Each structure stands twice: as structure tokens, then as C-alpha cells.
Image 1 (cartoon, one colour):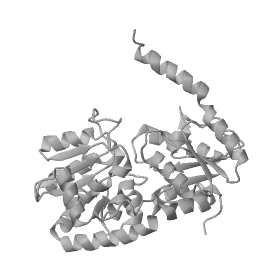
Image 2 (cartoon, rainbow, N blue to C red; image 1 turned 135 degrees about the vertical axis):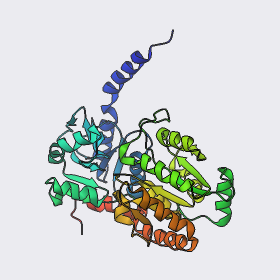
Image 3 (cartoon, rainbow, N blue to C red; image 1 turned 60 degrees about the vertical axis):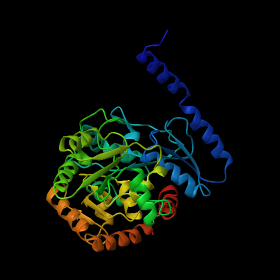
Image 4 (cartoon, rainbow, N blue to C red; image 1 turned 135 degrees about the horizontal axis):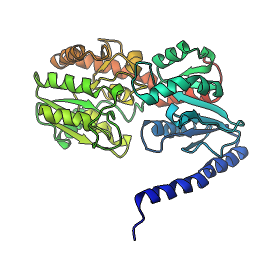
Length: 377
């Protein structure tokens, strides 16, 4: 006889409640026997960006810090405890109370008063409480830094370290690699291939036709529809939860391919197939795809927010348009698509820019500026 789903989920929650502290207790014992300072990095357990950052930090600075990647905050004692994003630290309308023997850090990825998401508004309302408990607040962008400063967070408490990229994995393709990638992905001969690899609907499948407002899939769809009237377009999508955008593409008759990949290691051929990468978000902590596209030699057109605002110099290593400016996005995309030499120069400059964001350099900043709580020099 099968067990009802609600009963199974309830039993699983009870088991997690009992066993949840065990990894933290075990790691704390290991930390007591190690000569390296200990850091527990708490991620989502979804294999998405936050978790990937934790794995990368363990790989890059694991010789200097004993790093454990977990989900449950309980059980840790006498270590540095780093929540990889604010929602992991804020549960059921309160910030989690970690054991006072731990040094608490958390990453404020993004969140502005203009965001209608009630979860973001709750984070903003409760921000003073969370900051008071933490020794440092880590941000990826100057927008997040300036927001926190405007909310009265002391500059000595904020550590600005941007996202990084593996500049060896993400690199421009040889002509044969590009041709092979386009053939394998079924991109028609002569089509302009535009990429978007960011989750922008709720959930983890395509069942929802709603959109995540901050990701701007409505702006993206408007821009793609305009571009489809001028070019033979093919849209390449990865990541889960693209239901809203897919419904818009199908309604407009724009051909596309959507693949959900098992890991970031599968992404490089998708960038190799692109002519342009388009970012239309209203607010971002990243996105990670900005640096991946730039490292892969793909020209980027983006709205002026998040890391694009910090990284792109308009007309030099990418193109920027104001938030929700469909006309500006389309105009910049057309400039690049109609002038291959300009697109090539911008792509080359972008590749040079991201050298400063290579993960070994960024992870070293985590080690020096965040985990040892030393001031930035």
C-alpha cells in the first residue's frame, strides 16, 4: 500500500529535524582538530548558483580554509558560518538564531524597495535585525552596497566581492567548435542565435506561466519579438522554469530550443553557438551568465543593473540600456548584429575585462576580505 504524499513529506521533515544538526556537529569536531580556520557555507541544495559558489570556494581556497557545504544551520560550534543568500538566513519571518560561538556572515544578493516581491519587502523590513547579528554582510554589486549604506549599515560591515567566472572553462570557441555546437543544437544555417540562460519563472519546471518580475522576461520577450521582425531569429534557452518566456515565444512563432542542464560544465557549447547574449533584468545580484558570456567571447546587451552596471562600459566591452527600455535593448542588439567588426572588438574587450573576475582571484578575496574579517586594502 502506497503512503500518501503529505504523510511522506511530514515524515521526511521529522527525520530532517532530528538528523539536521549532525553534519554541523561532525564538522565542528573536525574543525577542532584542524589547523585551518573552518568555514561552513550554507547553500540551497538545488545545485544552482549559490551552491556552485560554495563548491568553487572549497576548490580554490580549501588549502587555506576547512570548508564544509551544507544546508542546515544547526549543530555548528566555534566556526565561521556563511549563509550564501539572505533567504537562507531568513526563515518564517525571522532571521535564524545561530549558536553564539559562531562568527556569522551572510550574502545580500539583491533587493530594492521597487521590487514588488513580498519576500524581498520582508527582507528589507527585517534587514536591521539581520545586520545586527552578523559580523559582515557580503554583497556582489555596488547597487547592493549602496542600498545597504543608504539603510544605515556601516561601511566597515559591508564587504563587496563580485561573482567570479572560470575563464578556462568559459572561453571563445575555435571556428570548428562553434560550427559543431550550432549543428548539435539544431540551430538553422544563417539564423541569428540569441541566448538567455537565466531562470525567470517560479518553481523548477516549465509549468508556471507566471514570471519573476526582477528577471524581466516580459522585457526579454518584447525585445525578441521586435528583433524577430528584422532577423531570422533562433532563441537558445537553458535553466529550469522558463514557462512564461516559452509561452511568449510560441505565441509569437519564434523558434527556440530549451535544455535543462545537469551542471554548469555542460554550458560552454551553448555559449559557443550564440551570436548575442541578452539580459533584461530589473534587479540582479549577478547574473552569473554575464561573466560566462563575456568570457566565452559572446557580445552582451544588458539593462543597467546588477553586475552589468559595474562591469560593462557601454560601447567598449558590451552594451547597456536603461531598465525596461525595450527600444534601447533592440537598438544596441541591432548595432552589434549589423556590424560584425564592432561585435568582435567588443567581445575581445569583454574577454580582457573578465580576467579580473577569474575565480582564483575572486576566491582569494573571499579568503582575505571576508573569511578572516580583515579590512579591504
